[in-house]
Length: 239
Image (cartoon, rainbow, N blue to C red; front, side, top):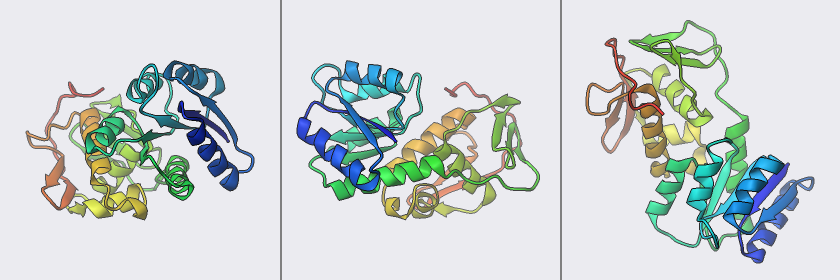
C-alpha cells in the first residue's frame, strides 16, 4: 500500500507512518510538506490513500483536494486543528472521504482509514433482476450502470450505494442512521453531515430538483425516500 501524507508537521507524519506500519507493515509511507509538493506527489507516486492537512504553508488543503479531484479519485482523509463544522462540510463537498481533527490518536486514525478503505474496496454487489426505470432514470443493477435520458452518469461508490438502497426501497423512508450504516458503516451512524453532502451530490448528477417534485424526498428530521417520477427531467445541474 502506498500512502501519501501531506503535512508540514514532522510529528504528524511520524504518527501516520507508525499507524500504517502497525496495521499494514508492508505500507510505503511518503510525505510532502507543502500543497504544491503534495499535488506533484499524487501525480508521480499514485498513492492508494492520502492523509491531507488543511493548514499548509503555501496553498491550503482545500485547494490541494480540489486540484487532486481534477485527475484522481484516490481516497482522501483530511486533518485539521480546527473544530468548526464548516471545515468538515467544505472538505466533504470538495470530495474528501473522511475527516479527523487534531490532536488525534493512532487508534482513531486507523479506524477512519480502515473504514475508508473498506468502502472503497467493497462496493454494493451486482444483483439480478430487471433494470429499474423511473422517467429518464435507468439503473442496471447487474452492471451497476446508471443513465439519465440515455446519458451515462458516473457515480462514486458512496453515491451508487445511496441510490441502490433508496430505489430498492421505493416509497419507503430510510432513516438517516439506516442509510449511514448501510453505506458508510455502523461507526458513522451519527454523521448526518456526510449523508447530506452526498445526497446533494447525487441529486445534482441525476438532475433531481429538491424543490420541484424530487425523486429523492427528504422527510425532515427522519430520513430520505425515493419516489418514482415518470415525467421528463432536465440535467442542467449535473456536474
